[in-house]
Length: 143
Image (cartoon, rainbow, N blue to C red):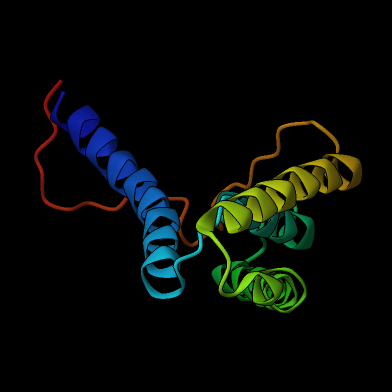
């Protein structure tokens, strides 16, 4: 019972970290630039698809896993830079409503492009062999 609780707690923390990354990005962009970026979550999704395209379902090592994550982050950074230069800079000084509509359009465009490129299947990535084992953290297990 205790091991199930620990497993659920760790899974909750991992999911919470992913949600925190997206929420922190939204907060920073709005707080600094005053842009409602609805496309932020789509960029996160595209990064996950890019990482999956690079490593497949079974990553060979934790290093390759990390390199794929950094490569996906670099690609998404480039997409964000292009989005800023092409769309958002043109909206400086106008009402927030326009940036809201523009980023919503980018969200729809990114979602449609992702469906065209990757399809509508659900993809998963297993943990690398170094991370796919049980680690004893000192909690006694009783059944």
